[in-house]
Length: 236
Length: 87
Image (tube, rainbow over all chains, first blue to last red; front, side, top):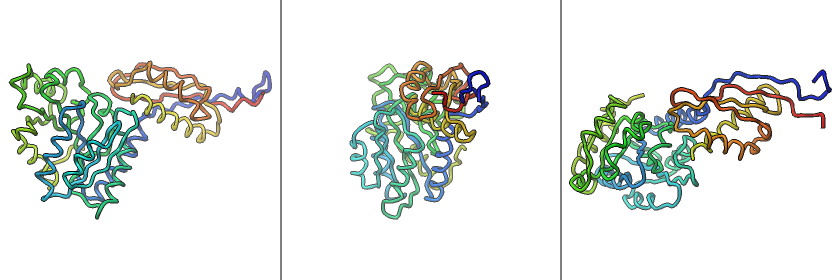
């Protein structure tokens, strides 16, 4: 109690906290990681700006691999079920998460998505693809419990983007340049994009592909198969 | 707009700190926003004031922002009080 006026408000306590505001997200992400292990799945978090070709690449990937591996997809969007419908047409379990305005997926939302996938069929998967909300900035800050973060950049966006949006390219284990069938129409330098990405993240693996023409898709499928079969080490 | 998510995560931490220390009111919050955190300080401050009433303990809290290094957003310290019983 306060000595001067007798009010109860004077007993001030200063607490040094020094804790990340993202701690709770990290805690839930660790739970997601455990859940994925229990499901037997490797999870890939696909991140890019809107329209870089995440859904198209997923469609092609699922069509090529669904007979070999049990695949589940978590679709993140601000609004609508459109992407989920496209993936569902491939005949694999999909859970759509709408963020209601938020520009990224959080671990808690993905946790709901994983429970959703677990509830479909036997709930056992080799591969879980998480398609993040189209955004080149915010998704990078949030650990979802995934095993591999994949950054995609399409040729029409320009080869300077790794320098302009470094957070995403720093976090990624794999960097995919998409829509390379359009290279002749755009002033996009593969060398520049790759040099900038490696400047930020020297260990990043880089693939070039076009999900439309099929060029380079084989290397990506091999990468994914390596993850599914545990042949490829996962960066912690 | 991931600042809103972060503000809400901060409010949950404030509530937990009040419970942990047996106080009912947060008077001051100091956070450090890393230069590479992709968090816009002005947006964060605006949203904090806009939604702090979602946690009763934080209704009267003032926010102080320090510029930090790196990518993290850190809750540095809080000042806790009993709710004002003089009124």
